Image 1: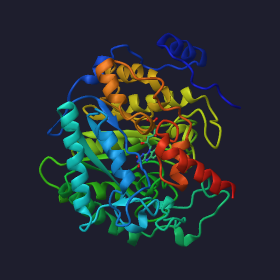
Image 2 (image 1 turned 180 degrees about the vertical axis):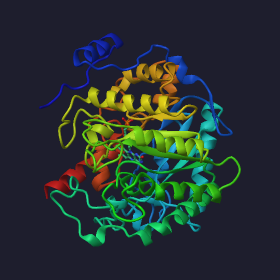
Image 3 (image 1 turned 30 degrees about the vertical axis):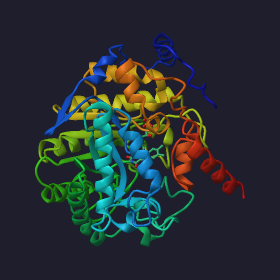
Length: 442
Ligand SMILES: Cc1cc2nc3c(=O)[nH]c(=O)nc-3n(C[C@H](O)[C@H](O)[C@H](O)COP(=O)(O)O)c2cc1C
């Protein structure tokens, strides 16, 4: 079934549609709340808007930012957002999601340094403040494609993922291999600090290695089965990274509260549960916050390879959304609200805001007003319309004609080319999209 496209343009229309669908979202017209400052660690953020990590698959041959990477981050720096969350950057070469995924090395560090300096300079020039810039550190696990073809390094066999394409046993990573990784996260975090990032994210979301381990109920040995075992690599990596950095460098994480998979095939669910059961997610984030001192958490859900409608509600895509996209928005909000309520004192960044386009500021303001989140993240919107933050903060509104259409073309590009928005940033990305489609047909 095809669901209606997002054509709503006013708050009362949105409210009416939510009522019809039996859904509820915290909505508020107090959009000025987005302009409030916030302190995280020792860093004073100028506003509540964040650009989510958005991978471009466009690194240079030495894994430093390539030409389009640099262009993207210049656009983000000119956005006016208080926080820019730099994209997935591999901690080891074999864990790259594509041949052009970024990776920090001693040799290429200077290129990252330069990019960060330029970003700060242009934001200060335009807005009088430097944004917080965090880097996402990742191992792609079962989605590793370091040479452009799949070379999975999975946490375990998964009856749902592997239904049509069973994995060889040798594709399951060994305990001995996992034991080596905390040191790699630590080394990458240390390099990130040297490069000038304000902090690093130990990525635990979207089906990648650490996230897959969190739900590895059926894995044998010290990294699977019990909660303690499934969280072992994650917590070891966080501890190792914490020990490797100094001063006010921020250690954070982007974590899946819920994978959108039934038990025992994912995290954030329990036997018999149809939707999320966040008991373990709350327990884990309490540990990260209470014991490991993490102040900021970027909450997300779902797996873009398997259930993109859960991760990034959309109107159009290669596979039609199996649910009304507003149901997806409501699920992300519900999970965010539950984590915020379950972990007192945490600073929470919300995800999945692009679908609502120019109506998203009402949700953003409602999340802040109701204390369901502290920062509001935008992913696809930042590709389409990087100055959404400036417009929102200065005019109190976003331009509907510049907004993301949630058409999934950026995700399509990511799977075979370099990602960006072929619709709103058409000069650069429309030709790449046409070329990709041509290749698909050939
Ligand atoms: C092309 C593309 C690349 C992405 N790259 C990353 C990434 O590097 N790291 C990450 O955590 N999420 C990544 N995401 C997910 C987004 O950060 C975000 O969670 C998702 O798009 C939903 O938010 P939105 O509705 O604001 O777009 C990516 C999404 C897209 C479409």
